Amino acid sequence: MSSERSTAVRDFRHFIGGEFIASESGKTFEKRRPTDNALVGHIHEGGQAEVDAAVRAARDAMQGPWSRMTVEQRTALLYKVADEITRRFDDFVAAEMADTGQPRSMMEHAFIPRGAANFKIFADVVKNVATESFQTPTPDGAGALNYAIRVPKGVIGVICPWNAPLLLMTWKVAPALACGNAVIVKPSEETPGTATLLGEVMNAVGIPKGVYNVVHGLGPNSAGEFLTRHSGVSAITFTGETRTGAAIMKAGADGIRDVSFELGGKNAGLVFADCDFDAAIEGSMRSVFLNCGQVCLGTERLYVERPIFDRFVATLKERAEALKPGHPEDRATTLGPLISQEHRQKVLSYYEKARAEGATVVTGGGIPEMSGDLGQGSWVQPTIWTGLPETASVVREEIFGPCCHITPFDSEDEAVRLANDTQYGLSTAIWTRDLSRAHRVAARIDVGITWVNSWFLRDLRTPFGGSKQSGIGREGGVHSLEFYTELRNICVKL
Ligand code: NAD
Image (cartoon, rainbow, N blue to C red; front, side, top):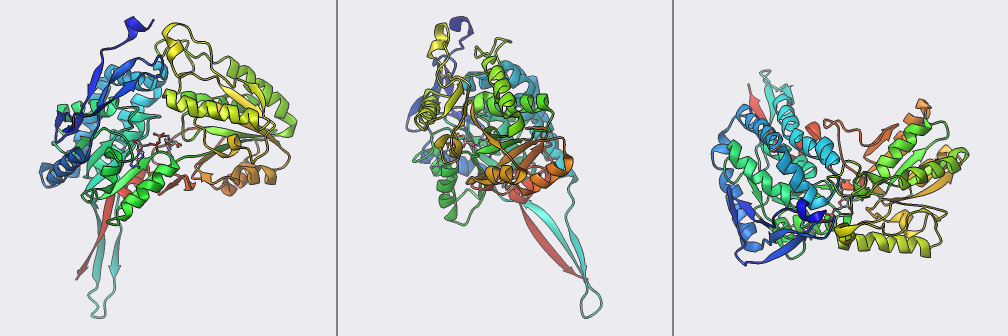
């Protein structure tokens, strides 16, 4: 299977000042395909020299034609970026599929189109946003006029994770560029493909050189850390693990640089007995198993009201066992692999911990049998546990795999208390037909995003982010402008 489907080994270079360049040090590291561990390519590891060069290119761009463009000219270019991604749709799908191993259908229907759409959406936001103004009385009676303008912050460092690479990167790059900034992206070491390809798109549509830069590399003592420590970077936007966020926040403290953080989660789903049962099962299947459980908004804790607990567990088990792990090109495939062998080790260690802590393993708990070359991939079984106390590691810690623990509850107050008993506060999903209860419970759960009778239903104009240790700030719609611009007040004495 793999030989006819494998692609040529790639060379992932940095994209700096509009050119694809190799690392000065000559250092590279390997990217392996999650489905069968085959070599995808060699990634150039950026060091201080590459980060310095990218910062210089971005700073120069902020003095060049980019800074003189009108909002209309800038946003017209961003529309072209979206159209060019769409024109090269198959290249983007192939690059992301090689990097993540997730099914083609998910790339085609969600991750790539939404990655392109981000450019149009934020172009529209920037074109249509108003700023405030005040007429201010003065003792001489003539008054003054105060009005605010938005100016770009400068050079934005964009540090990205691997779980939805293009979508999550453009969610930051698009508003940053729409606001007139230049960016330096540090893609995840696991997913170099689409960030590199976007460099070709930027050149093709005429985005001025140095406006979009990519430096590949790792985190600590590598491109990630050097970028966040660089005094020429005005602000840092980051999506990834909470403890990486803490390290980046320390780096950002030097020079008092602003940060926007989208971090980890341990999200709860609350299923009340009066819910639309089929919809709750359907939604929970997606929230637990989509992208092989590697979604920050995903549900790893399910709380189900006792009268429907047994039926819910039995139905979710049946549905989980019907998931089909397989090659991303096979239309029958409904479950991809984990991102890497290393991440599989982490997820399997939680599968072990659950057993050691006394879980009832309802289904899964191991590695599925895969045929041929797929046997070398980083596959795990979809897994459901019950019977653990709230103190168990798999109930408290983010696993980022296709698994969940299900606990029964007996009252609304208990459900709210259980959902809130976590250091995280990213998202929750509530399943009930009682709308009064839905509003009441939604307001009491300490998270940034709550869905009622749905999950991952996104309107990109809405505020997106987490409370507690799940993030700092909100992005999305006009909220992104708060981070990617400085608001400058001008007071005119009349
Ligand atoms: P990660 O924190 O390990 O890595 C993210 C990025 O940070 C990578 O590019 C990495 O190279 C870089 N990095 C690592 N250490 C660094 C350092 N010291 N300085 C600078 N950069 C550094 O996260 P991941 O494993 O790639 O992604 C999974 C995590 O992301 C999960 O915790 C998930 O919940 C979270 N996530 C959150 C959201 C959200 O919107 N809240 C969305 C997607 C993923």
